[in-house]
Image 1 (tube, rainbow, N blue to C red):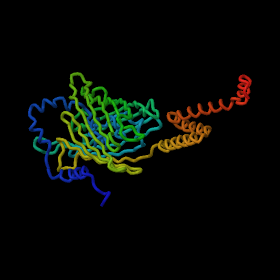
Image 2 (image 1 turned 90 degrees about the vertical axis):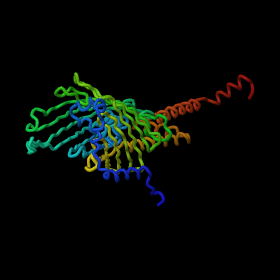
Image 3 (image 1 turned 120 degrees about the vertical axis):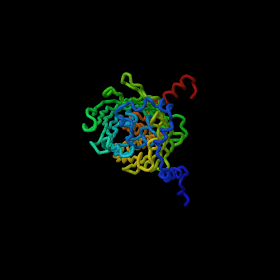
Image 4 (image 1 turned 30 degrees about the horizontal axis):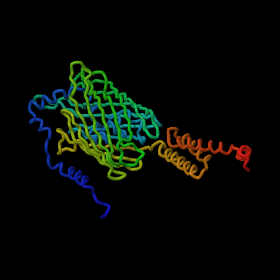
Length: 424
């Protein structure tokens, strides 16, 4: 039917999901062909503790290949950039389930809210792995469950916000992490660690080819997982910088540069990596994302879709890397987001716009007193609304000039001219 045509890239995306299970390939076997040179390239990987600090819980952060430092538009910011809570559109409560590798699963929950220029959030991830020990005679020995988790508390503030410039957000997240290894499996290996994230984020208009109140360019910087070593092993600390750009309204492309850092003496950091991703809105309620994480020993391709309803959103992602097994339903994550609204921000903006437009109409017909009153109301609601401030200044100046003209005694001027020239 006309108007119901499916875009080509959607057909390709659905085809990938359909044919993937038929390959039944163990991508981990590819490691065997890398040789010694491959080992040399990844020799610094796997030396950090608490991998849950690096594993994305899900959402758009994961779907865009983790190229999210300058995007960070939903509760996924807790893993990406702690400065983003000060610019969130909605208050969100999220729940995540992630089938990670084989029988390893990650569960997550997060909450984020913005009040004016202040944003805050809290979230956590929990990883659990069933573990069974076997003796040299293949008899079952000890059994238990390895578990690891992190929890973080976030706060950020947006500075310098105005009508023309959305501002610069600065934020931090304080984290605690733990790992629990049953004593019957490995005694004395449980541990606790602390870390912190610090981030900066700014959005503005740059090379914008469409009309919108929303900025089309973003730049971000985040210092992730910085903290003291745990039992001599470093945390997966990173310095990440990224940019995001919307060349047209429904498309956002993003890229990140990832610089690993080791705070443990004698332990080298991983090599520099990166990420690239794209998000395309195909309908008001549906968007699709894809991305690539480039990391030594841990690169992967991601794709996902976001269904956004009035009070509920759903993100479904799929990841492909050298550990993905098509025979098992792994590397799939589902994130449910409950939207609690925008704290009345849109209604306030609409009211300010209405006052401003009515003020212009009043000014156009010469009712300056009404124009001044309406402009002042708009500024009272939003002191940073520059157009209303400019209109108020113009209206006040015009009214003052009119009052000065009225104060001039024209008859007195005419009498003086008559006396000086002698002409009636």
